[in-house]
Image (cartoon, rainbow, N blue to C red; front, side):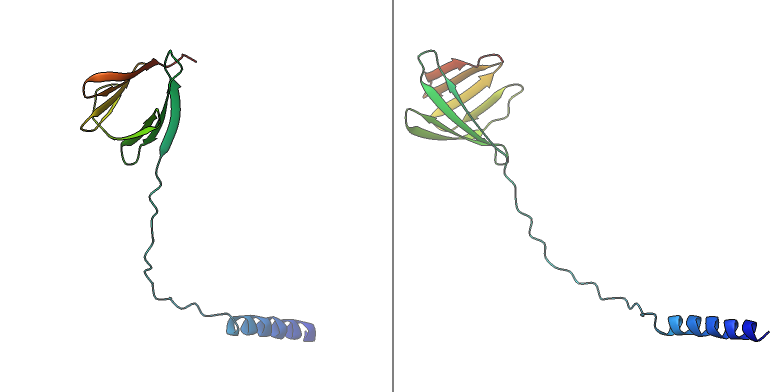
Length: 120
């Protein structure tokens, strides 16, 4: 009987001690911190050569819908146009189009570069 009383007393003491030392969880005030979201730009680069070996270097910024083309050392900045199929970028002088692998760059209505992408 003494063992039962001692066991109950010890268990009661452990339970009491564990409840007494349990940390109290207080609700922390919610803080709002500004979150900076970096705009990740999707840029695609490529180059294509015409039948004479002249290269046109292409850089498309899909986030801003712009294109930067380099032909014979001259850089041309273009803005994307909405088309049903293919792609079209233009500014006041230049128009760049690509449809089904046929690439054309015109300046003031005159074709200055024309190529067909090789099929893979």
